[in-house]
Length: 88
Image (cartoon, rainbow, N blue to C red):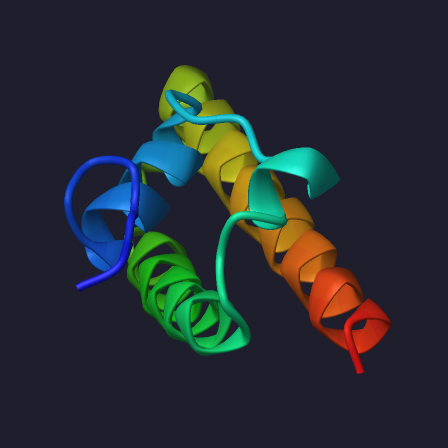
């Protein structure tokens, strides 16, 4: 098992989606490429779960919260992809 914040890659990806963990390029340097790929896989899973959760059309706060989660996950995924490409 890697050194994921929160214990596992899935727990870390959920925390990223909730905004509890902020990802930057310096934080990604301590992870191996295999760990980053695992985190990327789990982030994709969390993104699919979040997109599947459809709040009511009149619940503006829930819609905004869902949008923020998707944005955080998408940004984290793009940072990880950039980090993986830079290491090659």
